[in-house]
Length: 268
Length: 288
Image (cartoon, rainbow over all chains, first blue to last red):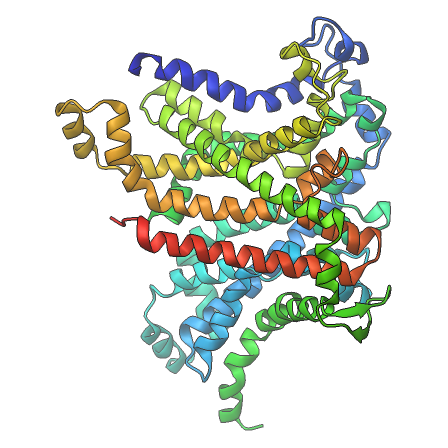
């Protein structure tokens, strides 16, 4: 049994990674490569035309820029709100603090997907359909982020803040020059997580965008119009283009990713 | 306002954005959803009359809803054990040292790097019955999108692929945290791998497994977007799930009351399942 473990593990991991490898390879296929018998894993004459077609015959570039804008905007606002909220709940004592904190954290218990209809109506009333603000609106509150940042802030005694305030240091200066540098690690991790989370969101952006020009790329990629015509090359090219930067980041950062998962979820 | 008063209200002002968002996008819609499920709602989203539990009566006698409910439960029943078995198997096989092992590990969590909608488009094309690669590879002629059994099987596989990266990482790190000395002792005492797993590793990774179980059940009960892209609920509603039907009622038919009623049923179901699982946790799982 022990002897076969590496073999089995390799076989298993190849099956798991197969869709990714195949998509990459198929993005260089010509039309006939898809229909050839026996099926191909590699193109007979690799071609870049799928990539150019993906850009020229669809609005992929526009979708991509919408996604980059909303993900950046969303991450910045979400993190600012999270940091501000975590700071207040860590260093201020005020009436009703614990109740308010629970009220914010407990939003985790309400599954967002079941709130879609009402949230959509809200966004329509506010006139935010087909706007960037509408797309990011429901991702701005991140209770897990608030919770985790607060765990880091808690490591600093509140006496430090009191001393700093007495010395004439403002809250914003204390936050920016002292707290943020020491919690840099967690803030960067959460920023990355927010960015990919908002960038990859699907159902909500689908609902709040009607105009083609406002679509985000994860929504747009399902509507490029190639796969419906069994014209798979450009579709695979668009998918490959989207996933490659993240794949590279994952491979380069694989040690950090393993560690961050293990400390965050099992390091109780 | 004097300075003292300003200091008093400052913390409230600072947490106001978060509170406002929680109210606007979580609590308010939650209560409105529940109220809408007890009312008639116009196309514009306005409540016109209070109707008590009429919507629930209509919903439970609605054939489409009965399908959604049974499909969602079936999906959960197939998906959760398959996913846990696959991810645990993967984690156990890769729980080794060396270059090959770390390559195996990277491959196992790479699916995490692909966004849901891209993954589902990949599956949709690879499983196309005529020109997709899968039927060629399997040398089969399975009608993945027009045979109800095959479509459900495909959805379960797609779900496992979407989850494997994250669950694999969690389980591997839990397995790595099993103390080396214990493993050596069990090896010296002549325990076979199965005995080592059931008597030693399984209890120690229990909390992680429970965390994954709870999350998988929740995700499975709420599955909608993969259905929307991959199968669109078909064939013959055989993969239409609760949240997908909610989406159809709310956004395609403009039937807000029925959509809200489904949403309320989903809230209740996920809540009950969470409670059941958490009470299971108290009884069964030992913590280190």
